[in-house]
Image (cartoon, rainbow, N blue to C red; front, top):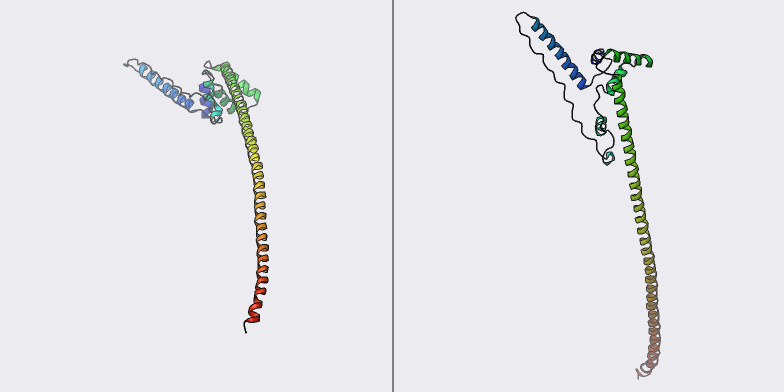
Length: 239
């Protein structure tokens, strides 16, 4: 299958991943090295040499998926992290690789594309279509479980948010009632103050009126007495 993928990649029908390109380069180097060793061994007077052992590239470490996706940013989590967290084992031939092959065969109709893949499976003993199917099923189950986890956590968040909102509304209602009670008490106090001020002002004005009337009466009494006393200087001053 690797040879077919490399052929399709050279024909620009599929695009290989970085690991696949590296593996293809190592395979070509291994093939070239093996050919050179075979030619050297075939030369007269040369001792056979051991073949070069090309070790496969070590897989990259996969970080564990966060236990609570909604605690931070729930979007953009790498699918590899989700599969690793779900314990999906490595497949001899991952489903994603077959998907890239199918993408390169999109020009064919579905029946022809399926027949081509099955023919490749029959012609190459290094992989089986069953491995891809099993890998796809495991990854589908992992993604469905992750979706259920997201939905469950969202429901918990919705319930918690609803409780918090209800507490906020209850606190607002209590504050509103307390403030309105204070407003009613202040209005009553204001009414009492207005009444008291009016009463005091009325009392002061009444006292002022009484003082004016008293002053006017005294002034009239003084005028009367002055008029009565003026008779003496008027009558006898010239004499």
